[in-house]
Length: 343
Image (cartoon, rainbow, N blue to C red; front, side, top):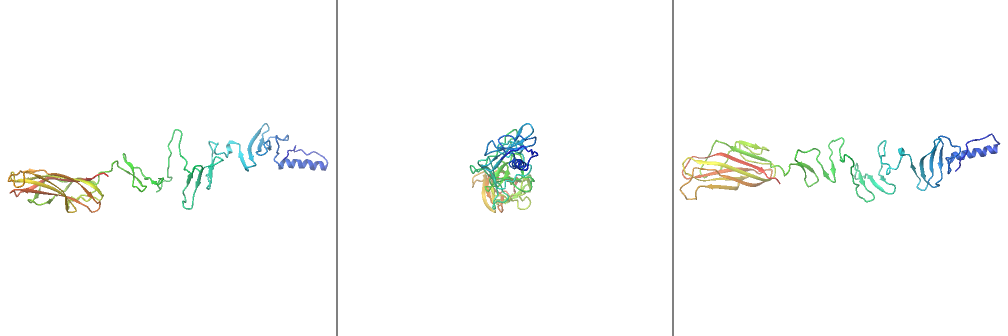
């Protein structure tokens, strides 16, 4: 290591050669020394060897020396000192990149340990794993400042999903008041609070009478509907409810029975049939069996909870009237309805 005055005087050849070698040695050693070379002018770069193991590269600007970088001879590393080219990503609070950051499977650390490591394996192509190498755990993600939101977005949206810890989030928003529910297999979706009471229907025959034979079960004919959320009630042919959603359903039915002969009506019945078999019955009577007196009109009502398979099960409402001697028997204001109970 050497410094020179960079001046070669007119002199004898041996002296000229010695002077030239001193100048070339100064150039070859980056003007190394423990102080600025006496020949320095504005723009001269020299190596300050005051610390022999971590010398500092300096630039003389004509007035002062500007420290550019230090060299660690033991670790074979360089530490740039100017803030605009700092390689110290731990202490630089506002590092800037001119392009993409390609860590190529390496880690970002603080110089002594790996803090975050990005990796992609053959079995997890296009996946990025972020790990705190010191603990083996995923690092905490946080936001500070006025806007503390952390937004995860798919750009462009496409058909992809946001998956957090195995949970698949819906790709579209729900409606007001809905909540997120899981199917138990990691798929989330929006649903109404408490679940919806559908399918649901209510059918009726208002005003017009339905003729009945004495002591004969007759299906209610219900050509009109108040509502039918899933078009599951047949109001034209079979007058039956066939929901395509499995679950427990609450059914209700009522009617107004009358006979033509005063005090001739003894009792009336309503019965639910599931798939052609009776599952519930209600009887309303005026008098005990064997009595010879009765009434003129009855209004039976019944309700029941029936389990439906959601594919083929159907429910119908039947009515029956018992009179003493009357032959003109009928019902009016028939009503039959039901809805699914929430889970």
